[in-house]
Length: 206
View (cartoon, helix red, strand yellow):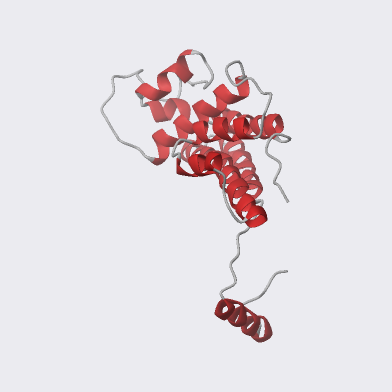
């Protein structure tokens, strides 16, 4: 049900809900974030064709941030849904909730769900690792002078093994070389592939 706060009857209902102490939590928000990432990705590709580099860079940043946020949001929603269904959390899920590294959270969640996925050989898991590291270097930017051609230390393995493709013709700063429509495409594929791989491994419990 969608309530319109500008409608006087819906507004009254909203006020009654607030007074009752009713709690709410939106589910499926990771899907909203993926859709937004896809829209940003489309704009990044359009900007690339039009040679609007600044726009392409900005939309690529948006794609990366939304993709990483989607991967984190899904874990949070799983735990919250478990609380809704069971009213308490087992120690395994408490550990996941307290963990700050999303990559480790996924590893613990899949273990909790008795997943058969071998993360040590999973390309999807390796790509997710690089996506989250790229997001961290963008969102939690700790600007430093780097030699031309160098990259932030945590990103270097992802560049070296070509998980993240760079465009050497785009500039000299690492952000110029990475924040391209090609990496925007990669971020979308990484996210879709990860959820495709794990879709049946973290079904919400009713």
